[in-house]
Image (tube, rainbow, N blue to C red; front, side, top):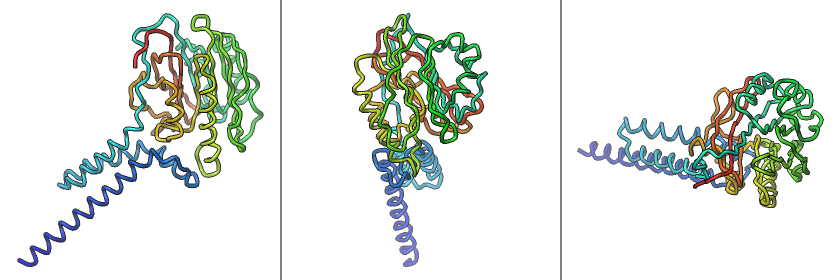
Length: 330
């Protein structure tokens, strides 16, 4: 009798400890997407992994149901679902109708000018792309793209990209079907930053004058975590000062909905990805993507469609989005 009582007491204690452990794990996950800290570049990496962490918690919680650990299971499942809430794309302005005036934008990190030029040209022509943002590009690669059929329609571009540095990762270019006026690049992206951030005014025949910026921030790893956060904060300041015209910012942000500094920036825009639903579609790495770090954000325009494009030779998926002006709704 005493042995049975002791076994029941031990079992009850073990259940309480398991529930406490599950609660602490869930609490840590709940806090993770809200901590705007670097911790030597470690925390942003865990925030980028939040979709994987949420899925792991959810699967573990479901598995524990099979072992009748209902309390622990419910805690983990609730933790996974609540942690995932900040990761969802906020509802934005979606066009109620297909406007006559539309614009399609294509953005791709070409990974040290290694992406397939043929596939880039096919994407541009097949989707009637009007604006292209290419990151990690050099002048030789740009010339190859423009030597193809895309060069017959993309007759305007921003200035010469930075000289090859950091394994040819410095250059960013905007290619346009429409006349553009090159503006000052976005400055102040951290003292150690070396990536181009070109901007331009685009004269669209139906949508009028638009402003566009090509974005490429440093990755939030140990050596560049501080300039990474600075770049997103300063991009937020820059975009708030450029509210006189419809604005498009597109490129490799190296940041996802899991990063509070990115969510603060994106709150001023409509994420074109919302046209495909509120669940973020991952864009990196291309072979087994788990995080969405490539974005096309707009203000003053309504997202119409959004899709990823698999281009060989790069570890990023391309992003293809169409937008226009018309009757928009939240």
